Length: 197
Image (tube, rainbow, N blue to C red; front, top):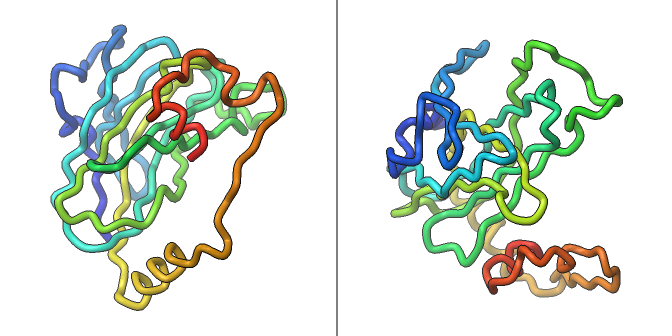
């Protein structure tokens, strides 16, 4: 297992700041039970730019995202947009359960890191591109680490066979005027593809 927990290595460095200011990701040192590092964070109205995290690994891996949702900020849910270099669009990973609502567990110190699966991929020559949801319904984003788990050949074969099997393709349709296409903020081919993805 490989862990990338120093988000201060993201580029360009001009997009990062030790101070909380618009148009930047804020650098936040942290220490948890089994991991420590520097996360990047942006409130829902920060309008932080895309940044790239160099991975420097090769071969197939399972990619897991470690994130923080400071719901004590009452700033809505979290949405982290990720893609690998060469991908046609971002994939949004959202956590709306702990969005500051009365039913959400209240951790007033806001110290809980969570982890979710992103995807399986061959990371040879690839880097991670990180973005905030700054258009349409804006969301906060706090990225603490990425955990990269190498995959064996049997796992890779199984993943590739599943992806090649066209018998269970997914179809998306909508006839609701308030659907994901309702937001006028999503207008480019890449933005529309991201919503379907």
